[in-house]
Image 1 (cartoon, rainbow, N blue to C red):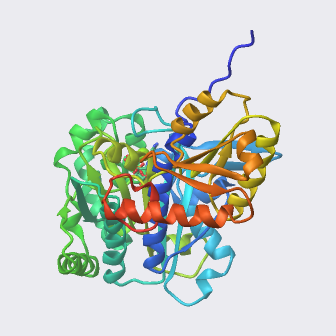
Image 2 (tube, rainbow, N blue to C red):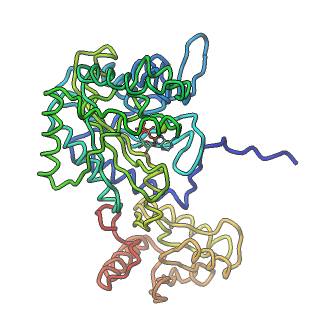
Image 3 (cartoon, protein in one colour):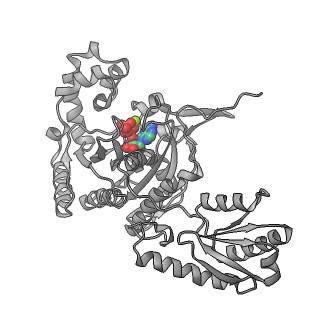
Length: 446
Ligand code: ATP
Ligand code: MG
């Protein structure tokens, strides 16, 4: 027998039984972003490699070790390792940055990084991201952070802390880099090879190195917060003031520098300790220089990315509620060909009304069909046989209560079913039954 081909290491499948978890996160993220004025952007999975070299930064882990790059007919393409670069490229190319500011977009995308796979660290992972361009105001930073927080709150995640920092602008960075260089030079020999290079090109990256030795050496490194220029320091104070006014708790963590080069001023992470080392469920910040770097007019901007797999790890761990997956509304158990014909016809009609209607395809016996209807959680069943067809009547069974009602098999069938269905929905609301399958799938509370 031929050997099964397996999915590549570091990738995951999501089967229909689990997809409602993804839908929950996607729906809440999307609706919340829309309520903050963000519109959805779609853009390619791969871009010209130069885009990432110029934005993410040549001394970052992402560019140095993690990108999937292919040479296709003499052009170098890279599977996007993150969303911001492609999103800004698309906003520029489509003229959005010539329209009224602020421009606000969100996206739900897959990203690709060649990393060592572990819980919460994949080679293909998914992000919900937002970008807001045009505003330099600290109110925009607070707004974005509050959007991230709102999404996490609506998903009912607990024990998530917000860490913020400011990594200044190129002006303060120059001073800070000097301080870092002199600090790390003392122990240059012990640094990893990448960091030796970083010491020359981009010393702040040293603080983001995952090697335990580099981390240990960096423990007492000078802090950027002590090197902020007046403007950056003032900006940071205002961001904090707004967050406090919004009732959003945070801690200032001067060690956060983020893994991508384009950040300036505010950077932030929402972190949980509940899923091990990969606890950052959301990370973002301001990147006032990026748009110009990519060929646009100087335009202040900011954004964040949320790792969906990581969110789901936390939600599973915390037994958070998910939207209830759609279950079968009505199942026709059939005996004989004429009954099957009728079931097919009624299913077609019910589906026109948006019902999930189903019948047997396997030639199972009646008992096995009922068992199957139970298994797929059908709310109602109808048995169709010769008698039912001859009388043009059948019994509609409520699978929860066991209650049966007579229903005619004529053109009133769907209308009658509709009213029984609504009755059932209302009575399940009355009794406060915790089977919420009948609640509309909007609302925050299901
Ligand atoms: P980390 O320090 O955890 O590697 P990062 O700084 O590389 O994160 P970002 O580029 O800011 O991450 O990406 C934003 C979010 O995307 C992260 O906070 C995380 O939730 C998620 N993420 C990043 N890399 C991965 C990955 N390899 N697998 C799953 N999720 C990821
Ligand atoms: Mg990383």
